[in-house]
Image 1 (cartoon, rainbow, N blue to C red):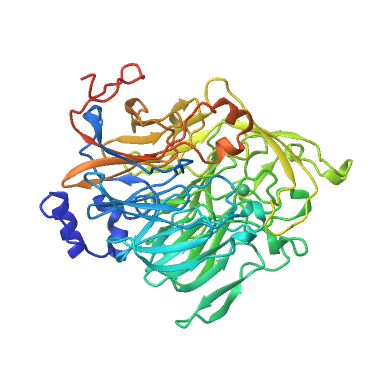
Image 2: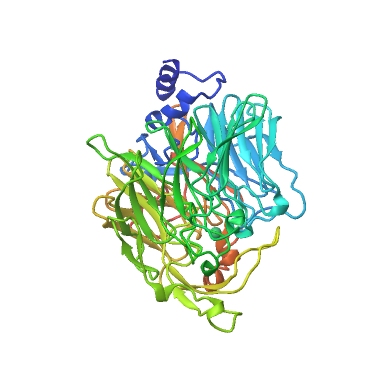
Length: 595
Ligand code: CA
């Protein structure tokens, strides 16, 4: 009750908060008020929808910068972080496992935590971090050496610190933790090194393990008592069923993008990455629970259901993409997922039953579609990269595949609007040449058994922000982008969709028509999702800018095409005002200056 009252008063700008601890009720109420940003996803469901509408299509042209903050140092690199904001403080993570606390009204630095990283960390895809979780008086984030750190929100002092796993075996962590029922839920990164994917639940106040659920079939789950003693909690699936021999012991299925949680179902939804190694001929079978959505009962740590997007994956189609639940009317709770493999899936959030599946990119070579009866893809066998043992033993036949392994969508999260009932998907159109090679597991070494080159498909664009109707599977509108889209999306009750581009723009479009109505040049590429909140009764918008991530490292021909983009590391914050803004490059787009 108090939460609702203070939130309501804050909406009116009447009270400034005394610093109150973040509770489960506040986190579960976040999507309704939109006053603060407490979770990755603007609510643990991950809809990235804000009910705020002070900023809307009629006045967004006046959206102007309020402050900006530099992460400084020589550590620019990719910045994929979503800030969280509570009681006038912004907590934002940066490359190389850093976290800054800033005054959300002025940008003044309050404190900084710089994690001391060891030599020899093995992040596959840049030294990124995607954000922190808030609980009680803590701000909790994960590090590149696979630790979980809880800091005091007021001081930045370490309250607890837990090791998730051994970085020398290839484990790392880049995702934002989420809070569910007083637990902090995290996954692991390291699918390219043959780690074993899993989801961990800890007491968010103490860091103590509560349960661990492996996402590779055949591994034992655990629960822990108050003294930290482990007890078996059932094997995930059945040992030996979908994996040959001992390969499940290094099976990948890394949960590297974290998860979402729906209080209405009590389930946490984690996407899982590729089975290891990439060479699919070495592991005949479906290789559960790789390339899947796994729904875990938060109370028990048991898998309630799973849906596998790409059985026996041969293309590195990590199924890590966020599962975003929504009300579909008639009491139906569905979830949407735009998978790296190019298909968009609509699934019953309670049961895992597939309701709909359709492409959200225009070229898909590995399958002709998804069979809605069986839930399985209709593979195109000749478009699977070949078995090296069928030829000279050194290299299998090369195939062209679309999407590329960087995906129809990668880490950049989509948004869902309950107003328009559309998903806003940051999609990419690209392909790859891919082939298989022999490989054996070696601790701490890349475990692929494949080679690849990323290729463009179209001359004029790779990225496309697409409004997708989950009922019909139709693209309602799209805004094309030259470089691949790598930042997340946000939509608001102001009928707006916000997203960033590697070219440096934060953009806003009309949520119903896709007409771009505002843009701002941030000075480096945007590869992070925007947020919005109320600051002293005014609606603010923020985004982190700083080009990097997987594209410059692994992007082949695309990396060359975009190698003119400069790195950075800034938070930009906006509100309505008459400060000057640079003239837009979009014909017909108003800016503060143009007015
Ligand atoms: Ca992967």
